[in-house]
Image (cartoon, rainbow, N blue to C red; front, side, top):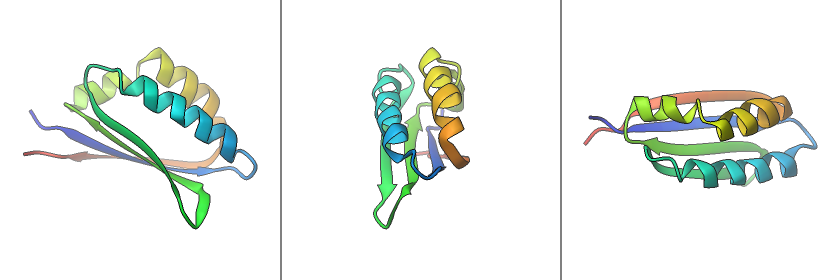
Length: 97
């Protein structure tokens, strides 16, 4: 089975940086407890804190899909974070051996 690396790029709407970063810290902590999660990091661009990248790794594509159905993903990402963004791009990469 091939691990999956997820790179999500968020552009936070002006004035929402603190709120989104706080929610992302909560999301990262919850995601790290999922059985299929191998890592979840959040980083803001040094020159523009509105630009944020999420670096996520899962044991499989199925584990990533499971992540997207969790109550914490729905509550934090879909209900709270997405409305505070200007844009969101999510990319999946096979991170094989």
